[in-house]
Length: 221
Image (cartoon, rainbow, N blue to C red; front, side, top):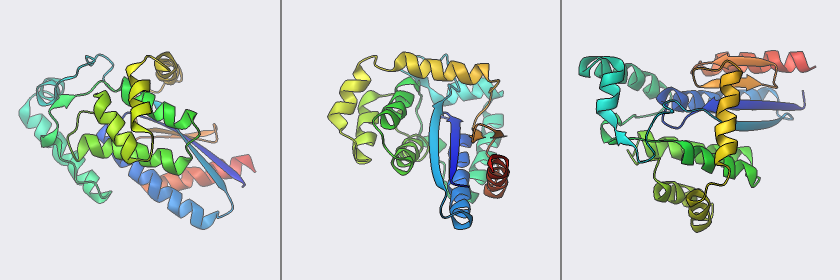
């Protein structure tokens, strides 16, 4: 097999998507050890976990307590996610997050990185940095200044990124991408599509993702 294309549908405010990315990273390490001559392309596709989030954001914990049934239920959820994250090398710091973020601008930033031709490794580094900003540092990933700073730290031109984010460029393309995911029946993330043939839903273990990669490769042979 000479090529493997992976479409990842996710949202940067989804903790399971962060875990899913780490699992995908490990699965790709295993895949490259098995298939060193295979060219891998990873494409990140938008999904809005909370599409009704105000552009300026809103208080994080009160929203989640209402969504999940109260403080006790939220703490239990955070514990479960934290345990899963720890196994993937993620030390979630939910207590640092003050604002629930509207992620349109973050998705536009990822879209821009892919549009200007950043390779899968570079774009993956940006996505990792966005997850880290949200879940490790508690930064507001709906803020354009924050996003430009994250982009700059990843080697992009921060002032140019800020000008882009302050415009409406590609906003409709991103919204259209999220709508397409809905038309495909994707209503939860992370969601992985391999060679446009096989799919895996949820933050599955690396070994499970690797197996789907093998099956996609066999189907393409």
